[in-house]
Every structure is written in structure tokens, then in C-alpha cells.
Length: 304
Image (tube, rainbow, N blue to C red; front, top):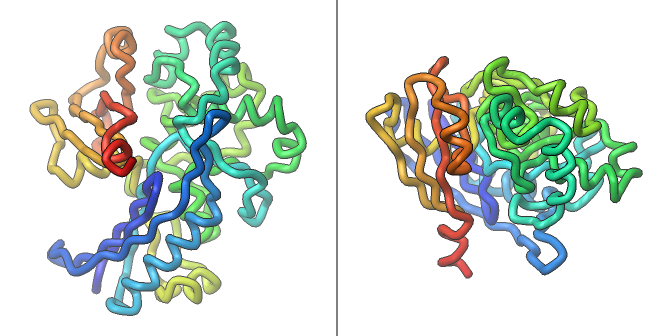
């Protein structure tokens, strides 16, 4: 029996396989194009799925006994789809400048401190909700036709299993998730004018989402009995992988962005965290949290 990890990055995805003792066996990587211009930074999420299917298939051909696959992804970027998960637009990356006006409107409606105490985040246009508001205002037909709003973790999980679930850590990157109640915030969503039913069901980090559908099995080479797990936002996965489980440890992760991730044994002072724009995120261990201090320019700068 083998276990696989699927990591959806901003510019590429990788599928890594391990044996039952956690020994690394192999990895497949596929990149996909990102468009960056003065007016916007976008990605075609259907190309992400093409990469996902190809990377998994490469590993499944070598290791046909993959019993479980966990999905992690980068944050913030979302896509609205129809009921079958077909994208209705090109997705905006977190670095896209659109949404700044909507972020100000939401902050004026609720207050910066209130948003921070609900979501663990100081308001910023990088988060999904501001761009969802922008899309609803500027492309109303897309919002009207939308049957689901996915981030990349739950988008991939839906296409693999047919189930709509998102883990707590990635859900926080919307700036519409209540980190105390561990569910999407009706207060934030009502102020934003966004229907909460469009989002996937929020589940604890590491929850089994379901088994691979017959269609996905054909595209990936996985067995229909393979279990797909909603793991986490990529920075939380990095902290787990580094063995950081208590307040004595912090992780420095360098991917497309560089991110320092300290672990907190209880909810940290939100006002203090907000002053430094540090994000507060529910961790894999109930009652514990991590915080993010990051720069846009990590691996992205080297790639450029």
C-alpha cells in the first residue's frame, strides 16, 4: 500500500508517493501558465486540473497500489463554477490588484477590528471575499450563474470525488471564515452580499472527503477505492511536515512566497497579530493555531 500527497501550487502541482513507513518513493511535477499584467493576475484553473491528472497518472502507473491521496493547495485564489464544476471565469490570483475598493467597503461596513477578530485576518484585498465582491459587481452574470465557489483544494477534491469539502485552514484564506466557530461567517458574508451556500462544507484538517469517482479513476489511473483527504493550506502542511506541533517551534517555508509560520498553543492576541498583518489560522491540533508572516517574493522572485 502507498500514500500520496498532491500539492497544488501557484505555478505547478506535484504528486509525491510514500510507502507505509513514510519512506519517499517518487514524485511527478507539472507546471501551468500564469498570466500577470497591469490589469490583473490570472490562472486558468482547467489547466490546473490537466496538470493534476497528469501528475497523478505518472505516479499511479509506477505505484498502482496508492490507497490514499491528500490534497493541499495555495490559498486565496477561487473560481466560480456551474453545478458540474466547470469554471465560469478565469481565476484571479491573490496578487491581483482587483478587489481593493470592495475590501474598503467591507471594512467600512464591519470595522477592521471586527473582521480581524472574526477571521483572524487584517483586511486586505488579497483575500478571496474582496475579489468575489469585485466579480459580483463587475461580472454579475457570472455570479448569477454560479452554483459553487471553490478554492483550489476543494476544487480539485470535487473533481476527484464529487464531494464539496474544504478544510479549516484553507477556508480562512477567504477572509469570510470564523476561526472561533470554525465555519463560514454569516456576518461577513451578509455584509459582502455573498451567499454562504456557494461555499464547500468546512471540515477539520485531514478529513477524508471520499473515494475517487469512476471518471476520475480513468483520468488518473487511481483505483476507485482510493480515498481522497482534504489536508490543508500549503503552509499548514509545511508546518506539519517539519514536525512543528507546539509553541516552541516556527517554520520557514519557501515556495512561490516565503512564509514564517510559528505555532501557538492557544489563540494568540488578535489585536497584536493584526498590527503586524499576521494571519491567525486554526491548526491541525484542535485549540492550537499558527500565524503567517510572509512575503509575496519567495520562489516567485527566483523564477522571475
